[in-house]
Image 1 (cartoon, rainbow, N blue to C red):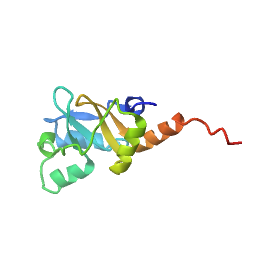
Image 2 (image 1 turned 90 degrees about the vertical axis):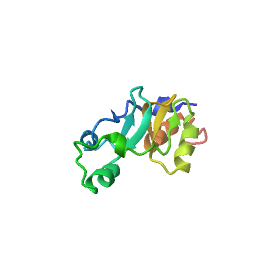
Image 3 (image 1 turned 45 degrees about the vertical axis):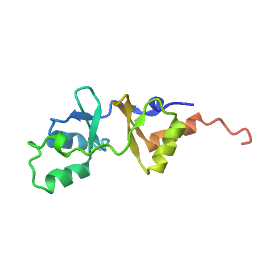
Image 4 (image 1 turned 180 degrees about the horizontal axis):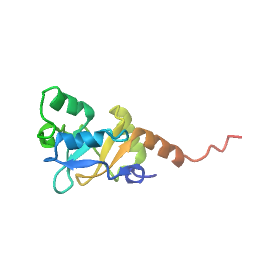
Length: 134
């Protein structure tokens, strides 16, 4: 059975806690980026910033995005999954938590992101062919 590290997207976008909300906004303006992860100097995941976070914590409060550090607004990650977890376990985890994607860690260090859509495709590839099909 394949592992999470085999199906994850490596090196997701991340910034340091002292980076600004404006820097996160620039990354989130890219259509393929759904979240910006916040990591400490060792690459350990400390938080997550989404478009909703920016609206709620910066725009709605009238804060200056050029002066607002991510460490002040980042949310703690709800869930993480280890890179060595089996894919079928990861799929059940995403289903149980109704999550579309989850950060992948290795010893607390951010190493990737796993999305439900990529995981479903990967699990379908791993399934043996049905011998009864004609």
